[in-house]
Image (cartoon, rainbow over all chains, first blue to last red; front, side, top):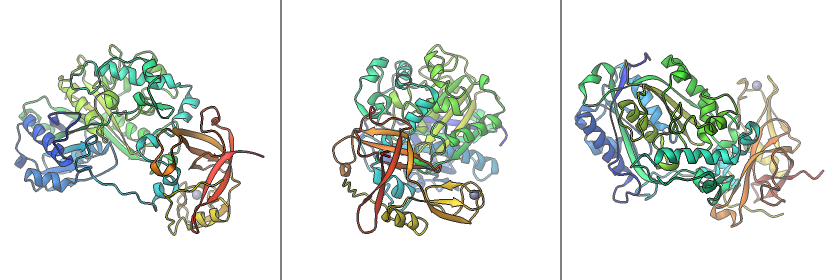
Length: 379
Length: 137
Ligand SMILES: [Zn+2]
């Protein structure tokens, strides 16, 4: 697709983030959808395409009284919304629809009417991993990290530093769940969850949602907010289970998705002003920095040590505080996208001055899936 | 050593040979006759070259500890004590998830790249699971 032909013209999160027991999973989807429609100055009848994951697209459509002529329920974990936006952009370019609403709502903490995912003892996971005690993502996503640490000379304190720096960003964000400053010692002294991962290296578990509205870029000026253009994008899947990840120190899905995004945008890494890398756990941004090409192999730790992604650094990363400090409902990808849109609109809590290009990278299902965007606010 | 799991695999036609092998204390891998690549878990087509001419062979059972975590909050059916969830690198090349048994479940005892060997533990008439322990020979 040609760069900058599709724009995000509506973006909003749920009215509140954190603990929201008064809304179901579907209710969270509807709340953020209504907020995004208001942000764009649109009514549900203006939407002719719907995409969501976790909740079923027809439930969201019916709740808004829409009969969409394009739908996407791609479900590849926390980056599903990246793929929805990318597929929606292609669908709009193909003329299948004009105005697409992508929603995410997840009752991660309160568990009000959550989706139910049944274990399947016959699939790769069920046959070759479940018998060994894997459960929540903290027992799967984390498994490759000791290999990464040893092969790249990265330390557990470097993992802790990711959490510390992101808390610095969160401190500037009134909507962040955790804002109090922390030190590397604080992280290293927090309870062990799954060695070597300690509590403060793991994401939050909260309730919330977010929605985006996309349309053709030539309509971008018809909306009340500054349009955010899709300059480039990528997606990929690799391993169905964590043990099937080909290289425990590098994600093939990250590399494929990132390369496609940079090539389709026609930019170099030095052009990037702002970066989001989905941080379900503290190691993921380190993999992302290397696999997307911002750092050479083994040098992501130095990037953090030199504070190049921290406030005041050359490449502000995870400026909302990330999944570690801002919020994490389970499928966090939507919040990374929301922060990139805010940065491109110039409305972020920790706004990067004069930011013109934002790269946003999502991960799904323990390195299984990836989605990457290059956004810009300039044509 | 008796380790009984309640969450057990359900073999499929494509994986039955592997579980039959485990029941006979044999770690059966697949190898592509076209490109000689050994691979796991079982799939009917070679993931390297897409050939369908696949043979089954018994692996040595020797491996190294490739990566792991120590889960401090075991799943309810896994007991109360912290335990390893590990991935070993088999001598023949493929990786495999397992638990490292017969050794303390501590970072001091679980050294990356240490040699480990397979040990089969029968779960029921249909399923025997492979585990790994520090190499003894
Ligand atoms: Zn082959």
